[in-house]
Image 1 (cartoon, one colour):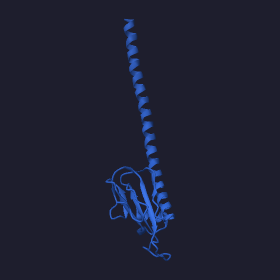
Image 2 (cartoon, one colour):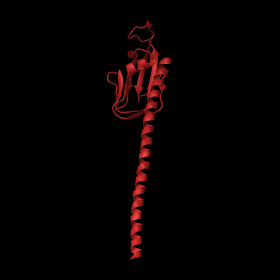
Image 3 (cartoon, one colour):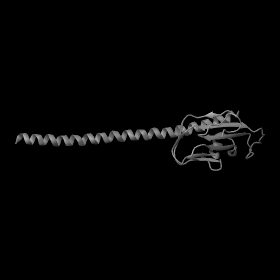
Image 4 (tube, helix red, strand yellow):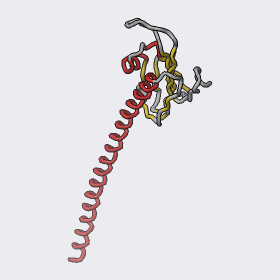
Length: 162
């Protein structure tokens, strides 16, 4: 009879140990998932900043050379517009146009980019001087015209590749 009681305690101890191990495993899983979400958010912020620097570099050297990003990540529902690039570069928003070769990206009439789904892609940008002389404060006057392409490589001449 005593042997039976000892075996019963051993079995209940094993179930208790299994419960504790499960709770510890769940806690570790939550920590890993939290860290992965944090890294994804950091990558989104880094991608946005790299995009802004890419466009700024293209506008600072308007020689028709294509500036290419690394692999950037954008979240569904996010995007950028001519107004955003205008505030970032100091050029009028109408000096920027957008194009894409991807199905998950909406460029509307070429004045904005909206990501329809989460996407990882490269961004290409090039700027060319127009030869116009603009007065200070003159709206819709572009001394430089820029093309920003999402996922579609641009050629180094004055027109985008088709």
